[in-house]
Length: 259
Ligand SMILES: Nc1ncnc2c1ncn2[C@@H]1O[C@H](COP(=O)(O)OP(=O)(O)O)[C@@H](O)[C@H]1O
Ligand SMILES: [Mg+2]
View (cartoon, rainbow, N blue to C red):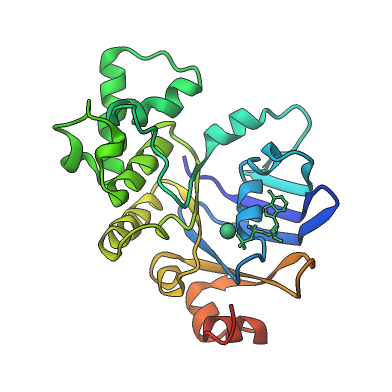
């Protein structure tokens, strides 16, 4: 069930280092939002605050609020593990469990959440998740073979299948295509386009053509210099960010003048 995300005045720290400052942003359900900006401006850091992955790093913390359909993920008593089952994540390098079968890779997150499944329930989740990740036809005859036998692009779609198997509300992706060849990249982009019918999708990308192709809205982050915090500079419809941005820094970045 796709949910909206509302972030209010978020500051993100590593120990005493303020890595991202003062981000407020509203992300609609059933949409794709791209985060762009130069390396080190805090895109990954900010993304990880949206499912409380940030705080697995010692001394990492946030100030401010992240609301999922109005519920603050950082309210006292909220279990970060439960948050991560509602807000899934796909990483830069495909990371299937290499010795685990394709089937067990899909089910890994469901089992981690304590789900006890009958054989037919498990089969239903495996099939629907792999269909949802546009991978079913390629793997249906080898579900018991190891996930590591797949190509990089297939492995990334397997990771997306694993993420959707737990029926999340939101899917976060941090440069999900940066380790993939152009054909696999297009397959994942097609998939992202389909995922937004059911999920709120947020994707970090350094590839501006990709942001333009897949996203409805784009958020441009920037950093004033080393040691300074990253900030959200401009957030608008993707076409506006690329063709008619308000801020000079956005225009310089999207036209390739820096970063
Ligand atoms: N685990 C960490 N511990 C301390 N500082 C970090 C950590 N990860 C990232 N940073 C710092 O936070 C800032 C933002 O990094 P990051 O979010 O990775 O940027 P981006 O994804 O935009 O390239 C950088 O200054 C980076 O060095
Ligand atoms: Mg990053």
